[in-house]
Image 1 (cartoon, rainbow, N blue to C red):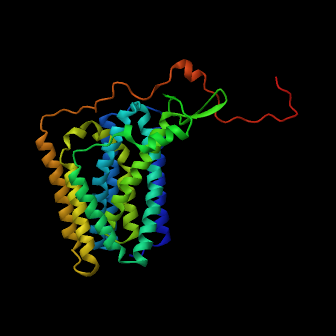
Image 2: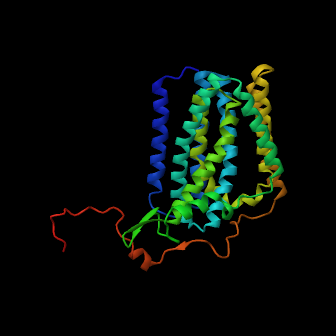
Length: 343
């Protein structure tokens, strides 16, 4: 696939523009409702599908199908990521009006990290094609482990990242609006929102370890790997506000995702020296597995209403009072010249 430099720059420009539009639209902290989340989700999906249609028409059906296979894998795995975010936000009692800022920066960091992972993965595969066997074995192992632990959930209270952060970084025990850092009594302190952001970034790194090898199983084109990842990630924030309260209904989703990882692991192992499964077949299997898991889940939980996850009886953090907010000093101070007397 011959991708000129101007096309890379155009795609990056589109991504930056859409991020800026999203940031401007949500510049003020507010609770995002289902209707607003649905509208944004529809827009992001339309952009991702529209880009895939452009790839199909410009580069042919084979590369178009590879993009859609990768996009479907990343979008599906992202749903599991969304549910982990819901658990994190609920455990730390993050006010809903502050969650979008964390997710925006989290997705921005994920785009950068995944871009680096994709570049490294492409270089390694190009230099050592046998590494595909390692990726395939890892995907198979991950899929089997996911099947075995499909009913388990993340427990933030046992997170080593949380324990390390609270030991190493001085922090407050209260949220101060959208601030990640505050200065109080001359000391700069992290707010719980920064801890939540760090945890969100770490969880995305964990998910990237699965998703990047998975997408390389359906396409070896770095341009398609990056764009499928990027357009799937851009819609994660809206997807979170749309699906977070429906987590209890997707009872078979993790099983479906596990079977997808097993499938792409088998595909990757075979394509090295045995047999390259046609892209249309691979795309169809992935679509059937994901659609089947979603439909079976919704059928099994028919009649259950949307509801938020149960919050802990004693959350580890709280919202700062007005008096505490008033004690916050400017974060950045300008130093007074030494010869200037104090007043």
